[in-house]
Image (cartoon, rainbow, N blue to C red; front, side, top):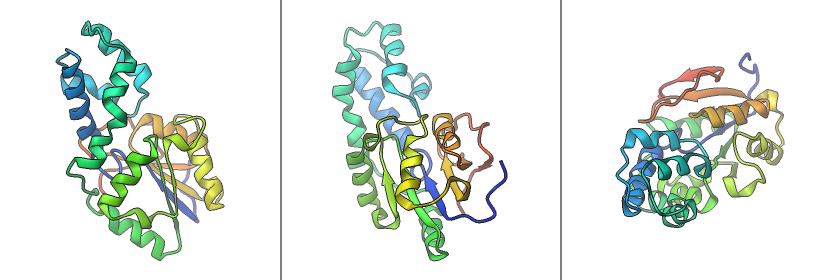
Length: 209
């Protein structure tokens, strides 16, 4: 797909795109699995990044003979809230400046995430960037999460913009699939610690600077 000649909105994913939370979440999950009796390497846990826990976690529990259930795991994980509330988070280099530059040029800016709203809003408030977004759509605000197009369609509806004039910035195959299904031009960002398969994106960048 060709990049739109006119861009009315840019919609950003958060985890692993604007902020390097993915690796912090893996450290938290590693600790939770340790509490459940399983010593799991970070490399093995990278399969969780960008996916649905109820699909990706049960095989890990089974492989490591963990007695606890996926429900036990999710209760302990608590949507990784500790990461967003306590981890030393920083925006990716150049990201805040990019948000400001887009808005100064009249481009609407949105955030579209699979993560639940209490985590995202907590992180954005801590980072001091909450007011830089014209719309925020989180995983608990739509019926179907990524890779379904619903989150992006909802964000575009709230902004009043058409997909052919909208760019999405993502870091995962799940997010890329969601944005493309919604009709967006997709730029993949690979500047964070965990780099996923972004081959389905229309364009790839490794820096916002």
